[in-house]
Image (cartoon, rainbow, N blue to C red; front, side, top):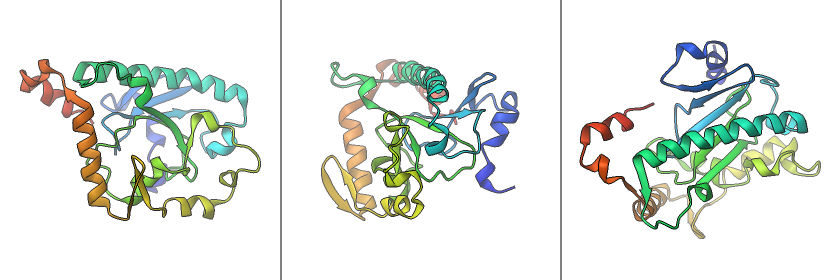
Amino acid sequence: MSFRYGLRKFLKYPEKYPQIVVFSDPNAVIIRDLFPKSIFHFLILPRQFTYLRPQLAFKSDKFREAMQEYIEKAIDIITEEFNQQYEFIDPSTKLWDHIKVCCHSVPSMKNLHIHVMTTDLYSERMKNKKHYNSFTTKFAIDWDELPLDANDPRVDNVEYCKQLLKQDMIFEGANFGCHFKKIKMAIEERFKNTVRVKETLQTNPNQKETFESKP
């Protein structure tokens, strides 16, 4: 079976993947992204409209409203796990301001899914320009943009969407062009200047290892 159908097993047999599936009910499944592009990265897999592109699926206001509940649940999970493991160096920083909810305009997987993730992009799985631009350009359709306006080229212009992945990489207002190693260094520096591991984990290496070993 094509890798593009790799999410289907979590919809069909969520009970078989307890390390990956964090929530399941008759309407949706929430999983940890197997290739997370940030320190926290979850996918919401709706059971309805599973083979529709997000541009079509979320034309339904009723369906979009129903999925909002699961987005909030995923954010709650991120908040709980973040607060267990990390803290912001600046105590006035709000985690809510560092969470992204989006769908890719040209999804790589067949089953409809919503990304809910922290915006740090600090991950070993962030390996190339395509990965980076898929979350930092208009290729990623922010949840608040859905449903898209009818004249938005991302509705049905696949080639336009794919060109967005080829744009120069922009980080914190600076143009890094195609220099992926440099942008990775900048991402790491920002992360380390923004977030730190909680002291309780620093003094208990075994506990820290447990968190880091999660899929």
